[in-house]
Image (tube, rainbow, N blue to C red):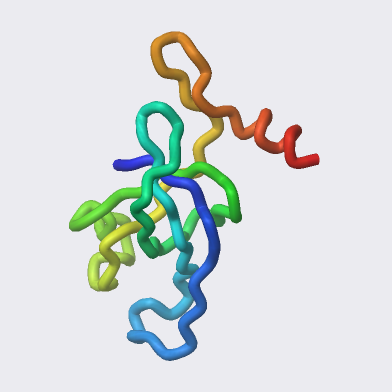
Length: 103
């Protein structure tokens, strides 16, 4: 899995039938220091992530392990919304703090 930030949504009215009902998000990957990396990717989302949230992204074959997604042509899937990240006894990210700063 990788950590990413949701940067936007992707709307596709014409797509393969197996992707019907799957929300598509544009995510930007984050490094171990909490810095945004230049890499972006489109990921399917069934957990309800929103813009600017930090998420866990499963890639490759692991993105299709979820029951009901085995036949979907997804290379990346948002599998969790992150609440906190701590590295070397230092808080790298807190959803609560992000929410407070945006108010």
